[in-house]
Length: 215
Image (cartoon, rainbow, N blue to C red; front, side, top):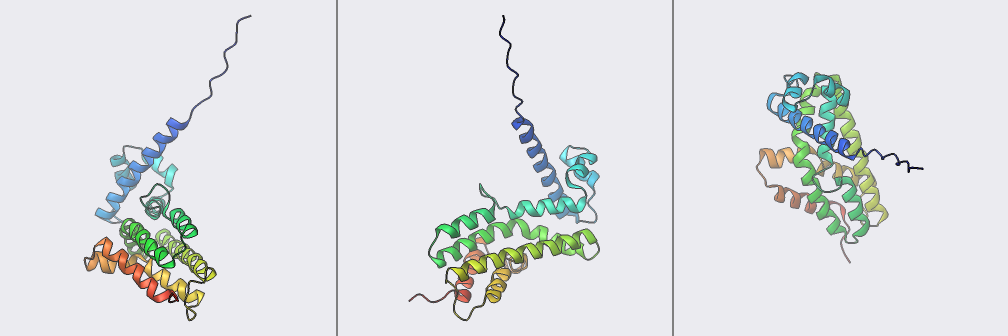
């Protein structure tokens, strides 16, 4: 009796990688057009033409123009490293025992994320005045960042790193301010600071505002 060949297992990795590349191309095209023309003047049709996909494909993947902006914003939050910035931050703080080193690494990560996120954040803020979906995105981004900074503040408190006069709420507010796109806008985009200078400033400000003096 002849051997019956086993069925070949379907490998979807190539298709998934192509879908990921297509998504990046669309997001790149959308980001360029949003930042060049503004939210209101940018159309899904123009993004589809530049991205080489159909309008229907974009609506299926992102739902709406606001959905595209949300995806661009979330991509920026991930940073440029091999893992998302929030994951690298948590792994770093779990391994590091020197609070000043933690702050300086947070300063570098904040700068990395802010350089990508700030232009999109400013776009969202401008569009939120007239577009309900963008207003919702602005509120969501504020809520998520505040939650994240409270998470960091609680970590500092649990480790005993905070000064005795700094409350959990106060630490959250400092971290919230330091991680804001608005601060990056003021110092880097308007005052022309380098990214390195901004990162150092953020780190040293957090150290002086939050940490207990070493014995």
